[in-house]
Amino acid sequence: MEFIDYYKILEIDKKATDDAVKKAYRKLARKYHPDLNPENKEAEKKFKEINEANEVLSNAENRKKYDKYGKDWKNAEQYERAGQQQYGGGNRGQQANGGGGSENDFTDFFESMFGGGARSRGGGQVKYKGQDYQTELHLDLKDVYTTHQRTLTVNGRNIRLTIPAGVKNGQVIKIKGYGGEGVNGGPKGDLDIKFSLANHTAFKRDEENLYSTVDLDLYTAILGGEITVDTFDGKVKLKVSPGTQNGTKVKLKGKGFPVYKKEGVFGDLYITYQITIPTVLSEKEKELFMELQKLRTP
Image: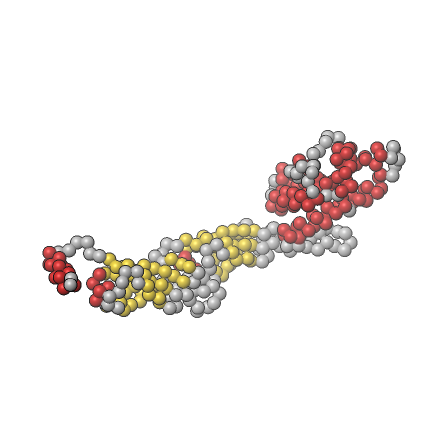
């Protein structure tokens, strides 16, 4: 029988604590579980090796025998009792129970990973929730200004999805029962949809509020007047006060972005005025500015 280095399989050293063994097992079992690596024979083989290593190293007695006798650890009692035939029944019973606790660890791990499932009272197979699927939906910011429906195709299944207005970039929406099939009759997994929003507008979004910069000509800034500005859903007229300074901010209440899942509720739009200075002046304009300068100079 070839020696199998269980410590190497779990990527730990011989001084690893029981807790370190458990953590290493859970990490690798998650990585190589068949549900996460469908039709991957190498991952399936690795998964079996990981479980075998955990069965031995998670049980203090088995680990002690393995450390002492290596590949012959299962025959430890025969060596120690000089040929007595007391090993068979007791050890097989112990192995059937998952190596003194490793089956419980295995169950706890998958309950936390897949959402849980109950062990049958008769000792039957454990039901596990199916794998959760993740997908990313790329939209433009304009697409989530209003609630709308969209059809997605995930793993060959068409899903009619209602996308609420106000969805945020990076937000994840969970759709129950649209993931992988359950294990041993367990419930289906869920589908997590992550929204990736591209902003091709002139507005900056911060939660439900919008921000924009509006150019304001020098004369309107000085004398005041009325201008037309863009909002996300159209144009509005604004009155500009005489003597408006560069960087002045104006709040348009309710002209921001819709608040997620609050029908008819919107944030605000904040406009910053950026005064533009004329760069090319006619001779007449120069004369007038010089006259103004003389009037303003004490």
